[in-house]
Length: 545
Image (cartoon, rainbow, N blue to C red; front, side):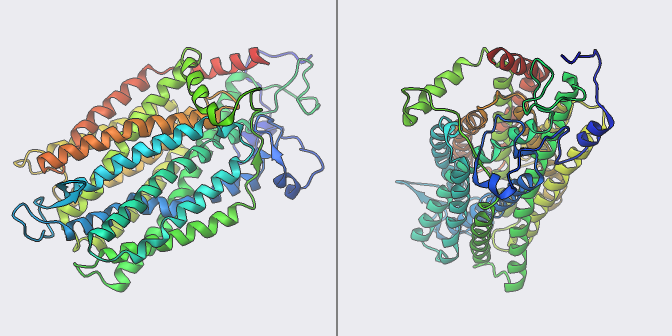
């Protein structure tokens, strides 16, 4: 039996692997099978001597992250802007006249009544976010038991691109085309929940492959190899977090690269074709369709390289279609077992709701403040720079985190503080007598630098910290819980923002509830004990074995 020493033990070879992005220390051979043979077989995600430490698999997952970027960027920027433009074109003022390019006196039909033209987009978002919640609830309970997780993921990404293809044909300024754009926007939002759950569930698999294989009581690893040394638990935990920060950041970075590629196409189209005030949004429609083509093509390429995963055995006597609700009940009972994981999940959800609400209001406010139509070319550059800054923010945190003395929670506090101040600045503009509060071009550009960079880093941090606290074999369920809670709360936030903006006619009022959401998230982060949760997960896993 190998004796465990008191301090962290790590030799030079292990330290070299610790600093590597895609390798783990003491990686043993997975047998004589070739890589192509492994890709065609099912892989048990709980076997830490599997292929999740291989560079080819990691890069294939990154390619898939890139694949979702083009349409994801369009659904957050150009699609809402296009719907806003068409709504303004078909809308009427309170006196029945045609709406101008500026001002808030513009209303459009919604159901049996009339709503503010920007609130129309927010109401749509609220409805579709609620539908996302239903999809997330159904998927989170069965994904961990499915042997087809890979194919569900690939199919959802391919459909994500397909739903973007018809946009270029919806150029008429009519209610019929407005409804068509709205329906496609809904399909994009619902599909978004599927691929996010499954894409995120792969992160813990890569993280666990960063540390040596688990030893048995005789000091041998699971593959029967005699270990040279055993890593102390605090070193193992540091390696997992470092690996998680790298995987999470690179996934978001590649997604942003895909988004930047699509937005760069949008810039070329906007400046190449010209931007007449009346039909400038037609360039957005063409860019959305091209982004859809890119996503469809790359999803097919990714399908050849992403390995299948072997699902957990289905409990005896259970039916898969009913398992979702039973697992949801079981998940609620686990709150006492993993309390800090649930606290972090709620903190992440609340911050993410504030982020999505802010971005939706912000992009609509940019165009309505600077003038719809005549600011479309600048809007293409503005949204592209947002993705550039987001990518730089994530990368900066990835390199700074292991090289500074700041803990991961201290980084979270700094990012949340920037988010809080940005929303506070927006609240200043509620008063018409205030000179600032996103009323000038320079404010949008200055705050874009800090908010976009810090928010992207915060997304990476959340995925890293959350992944380190999850029990093995339940990754999809817990990531599904985050998505499900996000949309369950998010649609309420969208509905509140839409109602406030519709009733007041003030585009800056939604910053006020966002301010309180960030504050609540900050408090929950302070309460969460992530270190204790990681120790609890390890202890419970050992007791169950």
